[in-house]
Length: 454
Image (cartoon, rainbow, N blue to C red):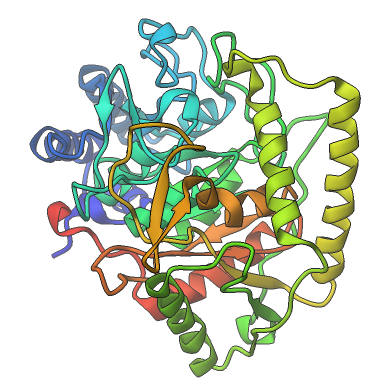
């Protein structure tokens, strides 16, 4: 029988609602898993198990008294340490906030609590969520559950590792350059980067005075063990109050009727042979299942320009956590205009296609690399040293255009490590990208727990 901690959130909620397991029992079970298995992973870095058990008892009492239950009633969760969490140390991975205990929840944390989720602790990340790894001076390094010598991706690395290991029912990631998509792909779980603005991002600790404003490009989204969880959590967390209410298209009724493209490699950022071979298998399985895939369709953009413009915009959006002054607002506006022109090209492309399958990362999950920075590090790809900066090219050119992107688990590459793809769609087509990714996940075996989680 599958361990209850490795079930999807939807399945856990169903078991609780039918009385087959109590919230107390599930919470105790997840706590036990963290205490026994997290030592070598180092994902859950701040813990408040006592309060979680009190909240679980309250959830069980409410259920026994016949009170109306939320859609996440009684499930225990962890929260990425970049999100303000009331009464629980929240650091953003930065020593400046080592002792920071917020008196409020980030909007998304409040949303999942309203629906009955129980917060047990916080998960690790890089300083100010600024890397594709998960380490900082306060809590140290989080390891990939599939190979401890490698990182879990970032910046939501501790969050994704916790989901993969069954420490939490689900997690809430942040993504400005790939911080949901890398960890989902590197840990073999589901992740969804929503269309920009769909989910409120207040309460984000990306600089000392963070939490009030909402940064350009940045989004929050779910990390989970099933596509059904992504659908549920998107609905729970999406913006629902004026003056801006999220408007999302409906899910497709038949995947076979969709127009799907595949953009698996490109000279602007060539893909490692292992990754490319794996993505070719994904597309082949889709075609075998009767879904036509156009392997030649491309948006009319210069991908390198889009990626580097996106990186520039991301750097400006995160400039409050750096010591250098940014450019004048006029310069930002000029770059924003160019971004809008690129967004129009993407919209034109999506008038002919419903989704495009793309790489997340040009290499498989890589070994820890903590010396230097984005500009000085390098990664080996097809026996050639490549700039670490290349890591974010495939993700940033999507994020800068505000597009939704869903990462399904697609199994392991030849090296025995998870490799994911991203399913990208037009702005607001989040339910379509989740549906296409769901179909891919079913064909490729879906979430499989790492051996250390079993």
